[in-house]
Length: 277
Image (cartoon, rainbow, N blue to C red; front, side, top):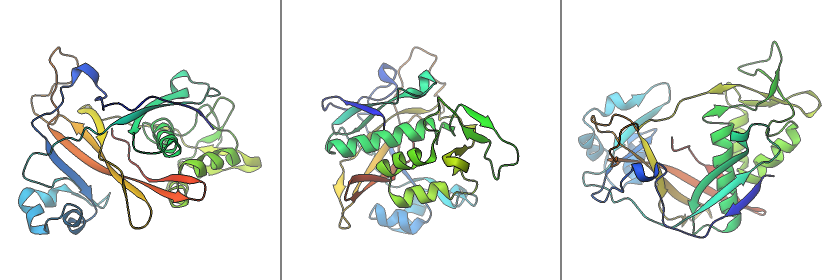
């Protein structure tokens, strides 16, 4: 497993630093879901109200993703929470690429140490191996593999043995999350011969309007899970021209995504997490 260091609890700081001004006047609150009924249930409103807030709601539906994207969920401005966080540094010193050895993430301070480590590990894995980039590097190419698989991970990769990779995943994620990832079509990873890891190799861009993210307070649910929201702040103004200028940016939109940790006999496991950008 990687190494971890933890800061003391502190107020959240937006990830773009001094370029971003805290949105004291509130922001537009948005959410994505697979049905309008689900949105209405989560935000204690009606489908009719969601449609009124989103006159173009039908255009926000993606048949490919099966979701309604970025629906406005309340008329009044949303006050961005300022709950304390802890900064967790995850370090995997055996990884060849300098950039990929370390990830620094803020997580809710009210989580216990084991839950903080699990959530920070999930951010690390998803940013480096299942998000901005997908797949392990370095790898040796192999012809004729199924799906998008390109080859098998070699020395210097995050893991080269599938058994060790599986152990990491089961220390961080729920069984259901792992099953979903490994059985995607196409699959990002697969077990190869002699305990090797077959891997894809891909990259994606990020949202240039991203200003940072904070969290609502984790709440214990009747099923024993801890559930809260990741509040992703962006600037959706037509006047936003990127980060090259001298002017500071005030986020105007908050898109919330669900974070869920489930209990096991060996501690908390991440069951739902999307990268904020």
